[in-house]
Structure formats: C-alpha cells, structure tokens
Length: 471
Image (cartoon, rainbow, N blue to C red; front, side, top):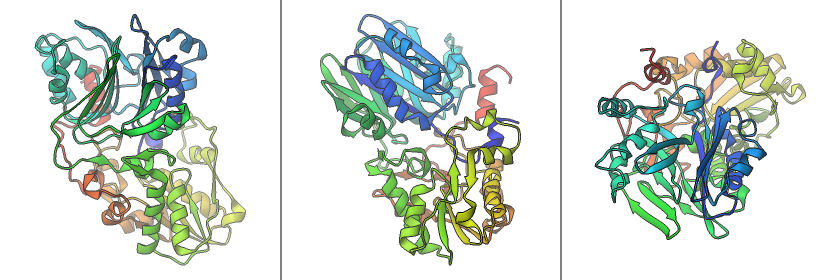
C-alpha cells in the first residue's frame, strides 16, 4: 500500500527560503526552513556561496535528518537558499532533492522551486531534441536548460524571456556565486515574501519563517516580479501579467501556518472567518464544537464563536508520529496512531466536527468512526472548503478526479459513506467572502475553471514514469 492510499488531506507543496548579505546565511536559511517544515517532509537541502565557491548539503527526510550542524559549518558565505520538499513531480530520489545545483556556460547555478509547471514535459522533450541532458526528474530543471541556450546564456533580459516560456505555478529562488534572485509567476499562484535582516534580506514562502529568523517583513513579491539581490543592491522587473491573479486559496484553507500572513492576510483570521460563515450558512443544534487538528482548529473557533456552542478538544493529535507511509498497512491503525479521542468530551453528546477538506474520504471516515466508538451521540461534519471535485495542476498533489470522493459522489452519498448525521460544505461564495480580494484567487479544484489549461495530463505518477523511463 502506498503513501497515497493513506492520504486524505491535500499534500503540501514545498517551502523555500533565501538569504543575501547576512553572515552565516546558511544557518539563517536552516532556521527559516524549520518554520516551513509543514510544507514538505520528504527531503531538504541548502546551497550557500561565499562569492568564491558554491557548496551544497541535502538529504531525504525531515530537515533535522537531512542536514546536521556540521553540514552548516561547511556552508560558508553571505548568501544561501534552501528548500523543503514534497514532490508533486519527480520521484523521491536523491538527485531530485532541491535546491538543484547545475552547471552551464555561466557557471554553477542553484535553483529552488515551489509550484508545478504544466508544460514541463513538452519543454523537456524540446530541449532533449536539441541535445540537452537532464540530470533529474523534476519539472524545475527545465528552467536551467532554457537559460543555457546560446541565445540566452549570459545575455541581458534573458531570464525574463525564459520565464515567459513557462506555464503554471512557480515561486523560484535562484543562486549563483554572487546573487540571489526571487521570482513569482505572472498569475501569483504561490506566495513569496521579502524581509530585512541586519544589512541583508530574506525571502520566504511564508512570513512565519521571517519571524523565526528575526527578520522584519517588508512586502510580498508581486505577481510576475523578478527581484535580484547582489552587491550593488536590488534590481526588480516585472513580466507581463494577466489582469487578475490566481492565488491558491488552499494556502489559506490548509497549507500555510496560522501565524503566517499570506497574500496580505493573516491565515488564522481567514480560517476563523470561514468557520463563522459555515456557522451562519449551516447551523445545527449541538452540545460541543471540535476540530480535526491541526488544520481545522481556527475554523472551529470561528464556528463556535458564531453559534455560541462551546468549543472542546474532541481529538488529541500525536505530534511524534512520523509520516503515515512508514506505518502499519491499515488506514484505521494509522489514524489511531495520529489521533485519539477524548472520550469524556464527546460521550453522549451531539458533536460538530470542523475540518478543512475531504479528499478521498477514507481517513475522514476513520476519524469520525473513532468519535462514534467513543460514544458520540450525533456527529455533524462541517467542512470549511467546498467539495474538491477537480485535480490541481499547480503544485498540490490532488489525485485524479476519479480518486476524489466529491468528484464521484453527491453530498448525501458522501454523508452516507462517512456514516454521520449531517455533512455540510462551505460554498464557493462563502469561501471567497473570507478574503479581501476574491477575484484574485484560484478555485479550480472546486469549480473546474482553470486559469491555465495543462498541455497534457500531469498526474504525478504518469509524469514520474515518463521521466524515469518506465513509459
């Protein structure tokens, strides 16, 4: 049984941190990546430069497993970039760990990427037809091969012209011996912020990383912005952008840490607003409100505040359980290792359970079964996002439509499958009411309206097989 069989939440994207102009930059990146560990647990890497040599350390597993203190001592220099990875494309192999370090005519370059390129396969095949030899199975590597073309290598403005060939979601950090460049795609799918630390700067996927390293938040990078930091200061330019952005709404629903500000808004506040809207649209007589931890916590607070129903801890999460794919091959056993029910809090009570999403439904069914086993009289499920009916192509490992429970079943059929008294989802209108600029958000996983159409199917396993030579 694979990891994906256990997964009933959207899988994280990746987290990136970059530092320029700070002594022991790699150590700062290391601390920043700790704050972003929730965005990826498969591998971690850091690349640093002292303007003479570029050095790299990376490994599989959590950050503390992949990189040690002795490794940091080897990564000397005042500029560095780092990455924690959950792979949406490319198999889980050493050579796919980011930041990628590649050499072309302009020297060594390191690249860290959060997102997913929907035209990566067509670009890769075109580059290979022209003689390029790829070293990894990731979509991120195609950018370096575009940069290495004779008409682009080392030429003014060539980076922006290469980026314009990419379609999809990307927040990039690119390091060479003397500079760090931060980039957001023209649709602004993924977040990337800028902070100031001492005499230097810090780039990060979320502001919680800035907080941990003691950096002062300056601003978010704009959609389509290319911001380069070198000894002469910063240099900013913009690619041509569409009239409205396509920010990933799941950053607010699930991915980002509640203490982060993402796309200009605090994540905890947005999630509480989602809970309040759920309460207004879908009230129910109940004795307690409880959350599926941790992603349902803030929405459950909002639901409780709006209804006046007391908030209680129905579930306790074991934070020391590793990733579920190393657990025994039973879904129910895995859930019981990760969550335990407070029997005295739920026994004989009508319980409202607030969660962020239901993807396949199997893990949710097990969770609610634990409540029933503990003696809950009624279970009323409230989901702070709309039903996920469509796959995501922009950096979230949503499975194919056939594997999404809401892609195949009605709300009543899902309720019946989960064996609960009531099930209600957030509406798309209710979801967008919780953010300040609703027209700038992507809701394709709910509505099926994609701002960029994939050029070919990019289901993770299909792409891995192609890139690894199995197809």
